[in-house]
Image (cartoon, rainbow, N blue to C red):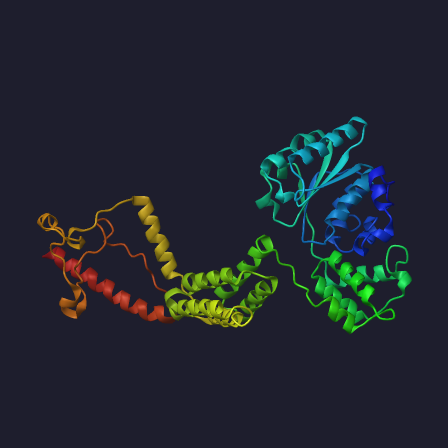
Length: 449
């Protein structure tokens, strides 16, 4: 049973319903009306018990758009009989934060607390985030921050230490359909008075198009209701409404990096179907194709390397194809490349060798170039011994001066590159093994002499 609303939240719910969009009118007014989030809000769960008992804590609500973060913040204030104040980190600066905190102090002096809802809290900088700390500690505010980004990356540790992070999940298609049916049936807040005729398949189609966002689904339903012919939302109506739908993709946030990570790891795991799926997801979401080209080329170098040197050539050709053809024709080249990279033999031996050589250079600084390898363009340098004793490999037997030292002193026994027994590197490894053995024998003979 909900406690009585505070003045501000009651005023919010009391605004003229006809002026609000459907998604706002259908905003849940009790915990029981919330669709989804059963992991957090099912009867008996710790967060639900805390809300119902009015024993609240400052929290960060982390989840995708349209999963109920704002609704939950409103209900927190309602159940706790607290004032509700909302600011957006996109539109507000430090003066707005200070004004909201001053209002909260005034309310606190009257014996009440304020639920301060900060939408897109990750957009506040460190100074703005720090402004909340003393007010949280004193209990003046219950901070409820909403974010679509990973709090551990976007929020400072001081604020995180004073808040609990609750992860909200994207709604399933079935849960969204449930919300749509409620909106169609409700006469006062919803579309019940219109007596719309909608097939179950049509609701499922709207739910899929909403991609986990119940607010988006309700908006699509409202648009469809306005276009409905004689009270029927048919296939033609939905074709108009859903023509330009896009899937959830943030082009730079955590979802973006999760998807490119999934693509890279699918290629590395030699799963062409998964690689093609994640590539398509990113293209569908509006990723910059040039960024995708860079990452696919990196995969060809890092994960395939010399096991199949053709991968790098194909990556550059796909990149060039996209630059010549653009989208969508050029995207097929990326699809072919992703499939090829996934099924190609894998080796990170060259990548590991480069990292090992770089670590050696950084750890031990400048080692002298052996005298016989140095350039000697002047008579003085030749007189100092530069280039003396250098063997020109094409002139020696078998074309390799096996006893010639090329690494600096102190590194002559070092072997950075260790080819794997896959793809072309299997042959490279056999050749390199023979060369290294011959060099060791030559150095041994030279030492004996």
